[in-house]
Image (tube, rainbow, N blue to C red; front, side, top):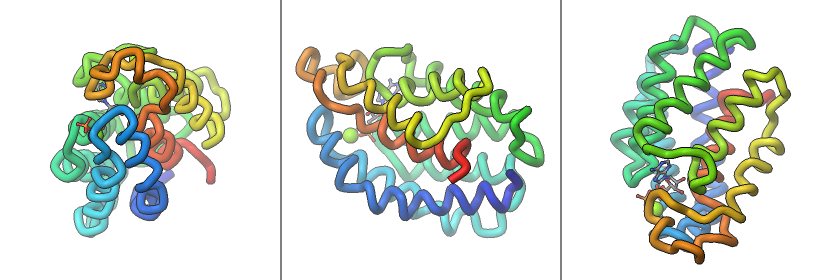
Length: 192
Ligand code: ADP
Ligand code: MG
């Protein structure tokens, strides 16, 4: 994947998040404050202007990170933003099967570090880290696989972020950040 393709895939996420805004908002209303859909739409809407004249893979990743950091807000904005900035630091001219694992490792490490999060805490990390591991293992990671990972957060009890206030009652809801990560990772990895 070259810079132009990456840019197109990331810009397409504006439409994806507009279509999914209500769903993400509802998920965040169940175990949060109901702003995750709005947050993601605001961030990806701002990308169009920010990525004008930005062409290379590292620059597209970096500008996306800075934009998400400043526009998404909430807990998720800095996490996604830092993740993209960290990917930019290890990115090459093209995203290939060979260097994709390194890129996803940077994303996953960034979220783990900034979020002080581990697996099974019912967050975006429960999609990002297993997806990274699957790519590294050479498994094919498509949107239905990513969705399965997000669905698995349904049964978890949240121990990070706002959802942690719900304790046991957070069980029985899909994590909104895990759901938004499905679309972000699909843009980076998926063939569709
Ligand atoms: P806020 O919780 O501040 O309203 P958002 O609603 O935009 O922010 O994002 C909530 C999502 O952020 C959660 O669903 C979860 O996936 C993710 N999240 C929150 N805290 C953490 C954390 N410490 N580590 C990883 N992800 C987190
Ligand atoms: Mg929220």
